[in-house]
Image 1 (tube, rainbow, N blue to C red):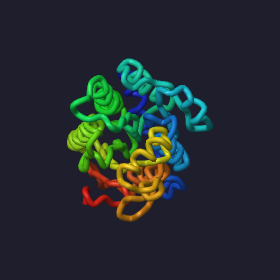
Image 2: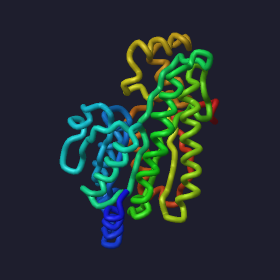
Image 3: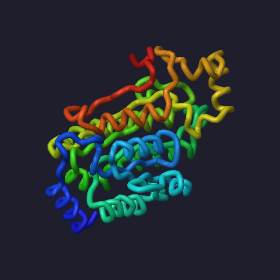
Image 4: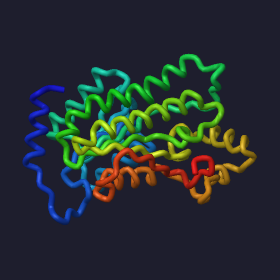
Length: 274
């Protein structure tokens, strides 16, 4: 963060004006979404953009630059575990667009079937990507969000934070960790008008991690068909990336202007959570 960029964000905030009846809830806002090449991240970036925001999506996958390409939406290649690269990418958004109002911490990894007794380097990798990089993202973004317009931080958590399963120790621990991080951030940032909320999806199957092989293996473990497994929640509905994106945009918008520190499930209803 540089003083020059911070002053730029402050000037934007001072001059910002919103139509009394905006056609789009995020008109004029600036957002960053991590893990934005595909799945939840890409759907979220596209939804925030459709709702009026200028959106920069970050991902380590170079395809992000093609997947998010258009007027007011762009993809940037960034390894979020590289502190210097992440800070530079956040600062570049301020330099290019003048401020920051919404961040969505979505980037993460999940490897199933990794039990505690066999976890090795994978434990460190989960911590590095899912937890530490999220903290760094907040750290580099917060000075600008304090100068943002109706600023909002959305953390993508997981059902596993409250209802973990065997074979997902590292993932479950990191999602519990980011949930606690979000709670502390909500306490610390409320005096500045920055809201911090966490969304907890269950399995979202239209993402890269859910290959046909992985789906079949998981369904077999429950003695279900793949179709049954996809809708094994209480509402018997499949949760898709676009469902998460819609909720992200809504929580970042005026309908949730008085909500911070919330844990919001989007899992079709899970008896272990309820």
